[in-house]
Image 1: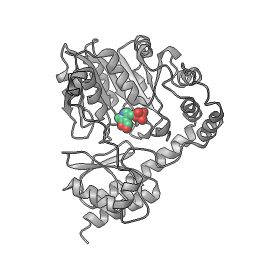
Image 2: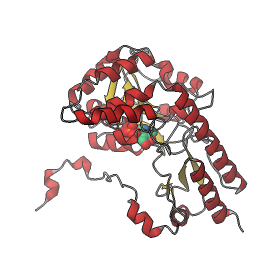
Image 3: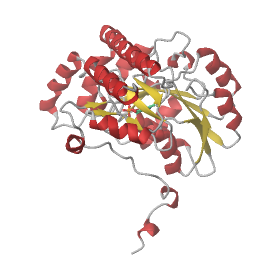
Image 4: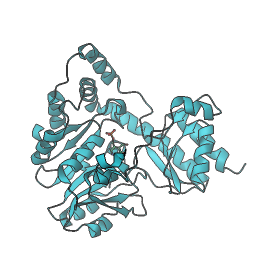
Length: 363
Ligand SMILES: Cc1ncc(COP(=O)(O)O)c(C=O)c1O
């Protein structure tokens, strides 16, 4: 049986997402009892207590389908960002929104432009649609180099993804650079500004994603409850998008893509500014400790505005294995010269520092 005859040819080169090691696999390798998972840019803290209570309340009603329009959450987001509800779109994680935008916009013959290394889903979304993808090296600061991106745009370019802070480097695009970029781009290109880590930023020069959103120009802003709001498990992301984009996504999305628990958890979290500020401080202080440690050990790093740091190490694969034995799980990127290290809670940061000192401290 030749199974290949069933499938679309353009799917052949796509690599399936590689899930991290399961808990029991890690326990077999690690030589310590405490494991710190710092590989998926998750929050080390639980969801906000208001969200836990709101989600718990919904459990008994799970015999019913969710509200397919996510009406209350949509209205809350609309008020929060001061945009009409028709310009809000929700996804099963912002990952789904990236896929849906690609599905609704791209045809073979189109191309997509974005910086690299960055979020792997930009590539897979283009590949699934049969579109060409153009990966442009990052600037020296680990941020997207918007001038270099612009140079890759041509009459076949449909989408430019801009990830800021960028995963895996944490570099940010500045307000000024983005303004020049968006003014120079042809109106036929949809800009998808992926701000999944925006809530962690404390650099005042950094672009605020919603500043340029006016519901008219072809710009979509994507954000998520997975990172700062510690709700990665419920899968809820959202976008601010011009009405035609929202309408087109609503045509192709699964009717109940945001489950009942997700709607409740997201709603209860969004307006807790005090909790967000507190968690931003905690992340910043852990990040500063890690950064100082890498600096003292002479390891190069990018200045990160997110909840992780990209650090250059001489032998990433060997370092990854050695850290795993010490109970520290980080994220390797095949072929790259570094590792992405998540900022954990205080204990995780201390353990990470101790592990790096042991590996690179020369004692
Ligand atoms: C840059 C970026 N965008 C989007 C996502 C997707 O997040 P989610 O689907 O959990 O909202 C991630 C997840 O790691 C990410 O790193």
